[in-house]
Length: 377
View 1 (spheres, rainbow, N blue to C red):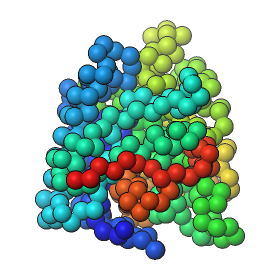
View 2 (view 1 turned 60 degrees about the horizontal axis):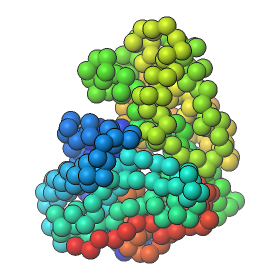
View 3 (view 1 turned 90 degrees about the vertical axis):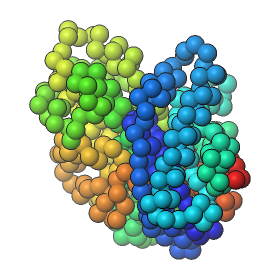
View 4 (view 1 turned 135 degrees about the vertical axis):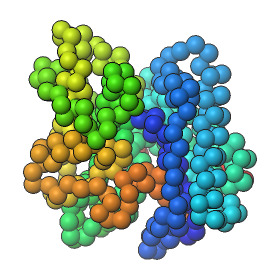
């Protein structure tokens, strides 16, 4: 179903909501961003969403109200995108809205586990008058998969190349990578692999905000002034997740402030700037080391997400990957901040087409599944 779609993404960084209005074609696929926008996460809502990442009082009530508040923010961004593009809501086929992940435990406890994204698709359809597709992850988890990452099939669609092996590295609150082998001698999608690498911006941002008041380390300038503490870095990397083979996914359930504080407790108090430098090194190393599972050579790495703006982090990645051509996705015409929102617009399109949008090679599910629940306007 070609047409106009909106994609909305609020990731584990909890810095805000990104959105795009895009014209999506099919056979062959094409994507043209008509309008883009973002809204900062209101501080009170951000604190509530952070609190809901861990057991707390009156969770059901608080989660329901937080979901309503988040969806009202989504609706504001939809209104802004439509106004910017001068497009009436009736012309948009669907909104793909990810929601806010607060728990991610696939396969845990009872063999199925769960993943929870706070969202309210019915309310968003009511507020916008547009069909909404939400709840993208739970079907893959029900089929024995990780429910994450969801974007590798989209990465293949827009960034795959017949002649060159590529990797797409998304550095949000959590980082994930997609390896796209050259398709010269194999069908499209064959050999594709994607998984979570570990913490992206989440720990860096939390430490930076606590000790400087800034919500993030602008271009990595603060970390660049510090020295990596080898002992702390080794303790951080001494986590089973990093050695675990794909398929794998993670979130704030593991990589949170309590986890970091437990590691810091092993050492005498360290200079705050040195901790920031070490956390940046942790993100860089865990991303770079993911190449051990690459199914084939990837000469070009394309970086997206908020971490693409961290110039010090990008520098360290390039130093760790000297044989790789490292750049942001902008070189191929899609802004680093647009990639995930555009992916959820594509996922909404796939849902309306009743086409599978997951890959067992990525999530470990028993098979490809149609993702998303549809709320008609």
